[in-house]
Length: 382
Ligand code: BGC
Image (spheres, protein in one colour):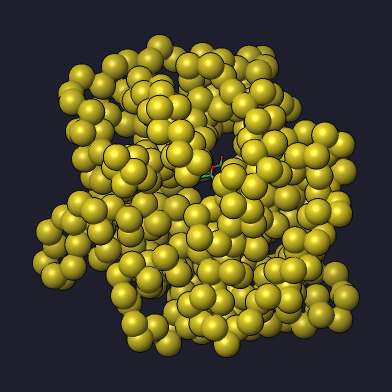
């Protein structure tokens, strides 16, 4: 793919991001991950939670008018959280069965867990998908807590409170169970980024509803990671027993409720190895060294995520460089893709994926969300 320059002023990319996201929110509240790729024309908790977080922050800083009387960004994020709460509460019986099984030490029945992708009206996407993923509901808890805090959405709607409580009990019961990671890969491993997402979600939920008291489970998760989730070099590992990092470990430093503070030595070592092993200079960041999805290109989404982390540790100059790379990969509409294929780890896999799924997802709403998050974070420190 030859990177085409987005011809208009940089601020316009922020406006395009707002528009792309708001236009592709579905009538019931979910966001399409990507409007043009058939396999991505669904809503995910994970993508949506980051999108809603971006809108929450953006609505505070750059409110867009909306007939509801609150910022259009807040109206949209609120509708997404409401949609999530409905999906979760609608599956309460199945989730209760899973909680009971997990508490008795019995195996999980996948049909009784939360799905990864949903149609807007609530039905789960087609079955041929790695559905059992625990990071998404964790990130949702983190995102909804931020929404309630920033938008002062009190009293908490009862529907939301029920969903939050149920997700906390679900994650507290099943966190040790192997599941697919946030890249929807390797379902029989225990992934450290997934545990970090659960940790952040449980922490955020407790701030929201103090009676939930998630401290004990969080302490267990952290102790488990420190005992089983480090590489021989002392970085967070991609998964238990693996001497590799994955760029998704940036999840460990989510603002406010992260497993680690951004400047914790363990986080600094982990990011240093991500930069050593996975940075595709000038393009973005690879997911992990064994990635073959679309040839294992450099993810614009991850370049922006690294930029967000750099802002968190006060390195605005590096963050700006990373943002500039992402901007250079906007197409002529200002759309930002999931990844770019000018720096593939294994190009032999590229065509196979194009045949199977079509061109690389573009626009990817989650990438646009990351762009808005970084822009607002940079504006906050300047
Ligand atoms: C990514 C997921 C993402 C999904 C939709 C997948 O290829 O690995 O992280 O949720 O696309 O954007």
